Image 1: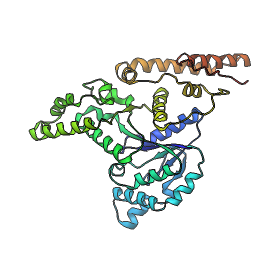
Image 2: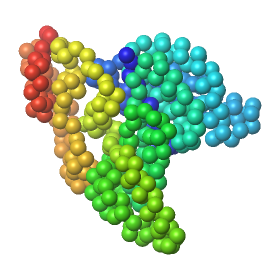
Image 3: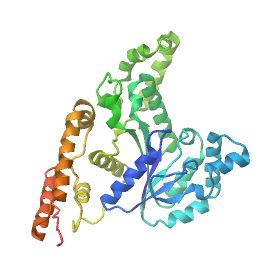
Image 4: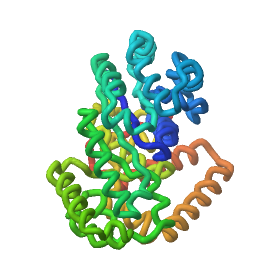
Length: 348
């Protein structure tokens, strides 16, 4: 049974960057993966593309032949893909049991009320795929109360529209410290705690929002979000391995991913970490790493990278010394693991 991530989100949220980074991470932990580009406007992908919707239809062709604008052309292209489903189905079957990442277009209409993308997802599901929808949002939206509330509404609507196992993700969390300081800790936003505390900050954001008409509307919106009680957020710094590992654990839980054999023969350190459950980062760890002590952690990582580079460049005296280095590497990682009872066997 193949597994897949459906990567959705507004433009600029980092969907293609995420697909590129996640494919590299999956390769490092031993999962064979492929990326499918469903965006007819994406003519330059940073990742190797196993299947590209532009081989069927391109945005430029639709805009020229049907005299549509960019947004209308993207909607038309997805309708065209839905109509020619056999083309897609044949190529997906050719991917076998690969773990698949679907890089979707950024037009919010497609995952809020237009039906074509949803119908395509359900057809993928009928092929036997276990799907998880991953809704990415730039963490910059936390810096303005109005943007954050808009993000909550968009995330809620996408969850109801997609009707699939779903995770909302705040991307570029490593950039958050460069923005205006947040009035609350990060867990307030990721766990969507009592939104009434945002109302004074919302009124202070703009004179227009202090109008009595907007006050009633703002209260109604936050009550709507809280009544559903569905929205929460994971965080992601795509270049940080621990952040990627934490998110992948959450995706695996949501999609029911089952790990393969656990013999441990010739596994890399990161394969061992994923299998044995290396301690993942909760939101307090994220707060400390990327907001409270970012410069300190950056310096620690820089020193660790320098030391790793010197160790790698140093000539190995004997093969036995190389084996000892491998053992030391595994022991370093194992300090973060609970005892799983799995014995790691290294083949010489």
